[in-house]
Length: 288
Image 1 (cartoon, rainbow, N blue to C red):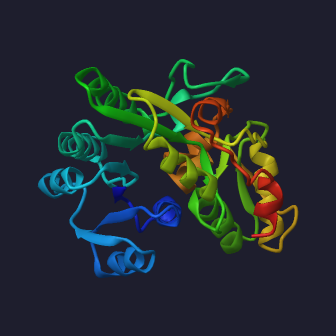
Image 2 (tube, rainbow, N blue to C red):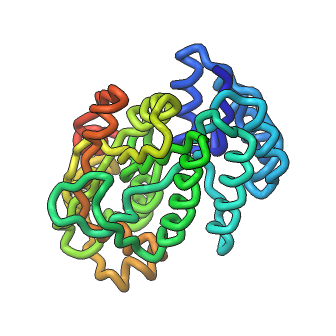
Image 3 (cartoon, helix red, strand yellow):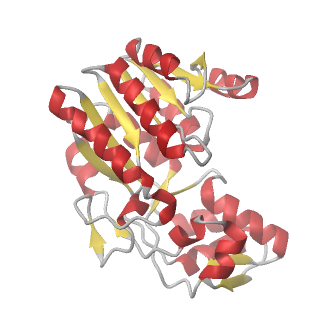
């Protein structure tokens, strides 16, 4: 199978290309720079020069593939518009072939206990724009196309992702790891390698499907901060920040870190045979 991937040189994209290549797939990956080209080529993918705003490049790359994984995200005030146009171009190119779009479980807001993909939406400001884009993507299932949405939880592993960026790096710089509020809220986690496996499986999912990419690990935010403090050699060094303090330090993502979420990935396990194997996040984070 020939798969076109956006965001292939990124944190999740690198693990996903590896998972695709292991299964003998031919991968083409969108790249914007020489550095990105070196990354994807080193992983065994063929580079496609362009950006998420280059809709003609996206359309033709999707048309030449047997399936598309959209993992990339444009950074900027026009994120919603660029993502919507990119999705439309790739879906136009993919036609009846699989198109897998990336969302995120933060759109569910605080969850009252454990919920699945059918829970009501209550997104923080940071991800509110995703809701309309995902509805547009999924609506094309009615026309005979094969859209699928994968909604990752908070991704960890390989010393990367948001936990590394906003927690470990900050802890090393300031001597203590941040924690928004008292840290009693739960996070829905997934290891980057398990998430990569889900993306591969999603290429064979029924049209219109939505899957929460979470491995049913729900530690509290404080437990995560404490684990990261051990990883940076400062066990127990945690700085509790009010939401205003956290927003000043981290930006709007602080509101998302304060969410209390327990999503389950049972649907993906049941329908796709997804089997997450990295199930001890706190130990892994403490030893990363």
